[in-house]
Length: 308
Ligand SMILES: [Zn+2]
Image (cartoon, rainbow, N blue to C red; front, side, top):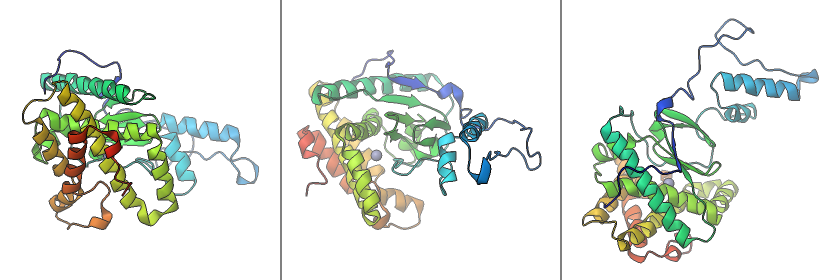
């Protein structure tokens, strides 16, 4: 790709310096309970019902302990717990993060450039487009969808309209998934911004509602949503190509990356067999096909895996 170095996007939110502190529990002893380590007091009013003051105190204590108060609320309703809330599908699982380096700073310049190029493109294609933000983090961070962890891979959170990425994912993409190249990396961001476009069009909300109504179809609907995000990534790639951003070999890098993170390929790598009924993102062939469709046509209307 032909890209400009040395500029940082104003939509970048750099939380790398925080490490995983934002989600790590500080060693804090509460003056209540005592035995068995810190414990959340459950302030209840008369009859066992929690008073409003009690609730506020409890959420405050949860925050001090480094917990996500919302996940705690979810936990009170039965279930819940740490991790992303239902309806958010992390895109690829991955391993441990890398140390900072000049190469990583160049990587930040690169994602800045791609983010701005993506959003300038979508602003031109969609009258009601509004920018998403990109959060860079290490290990773990809070998101509007619960605690995001590096192992989940990059993801988009519709609740706060932010894309989250631990940049060490790109090492994984290159080494473990065998998909090197700058356009492969750009495709990953373009896919996440594709999810943002789905939120703005209202499709994401419709699909999540349909999944709640038809749990049996949840995976199938998820696959279609993901394939559309791949196609939307291609629509951006088409526009970038017309503006002379792409170089020979870039399209192939993107297609190789799409195949590398297909559900069948990842399941085969895990050595636990390939189970199409459990897919959430689509096979390597499907992901390539939909990315290619976007790349070739550059046409939003051709990106409809739900239509047929
Ligand atoms: Zn996705």
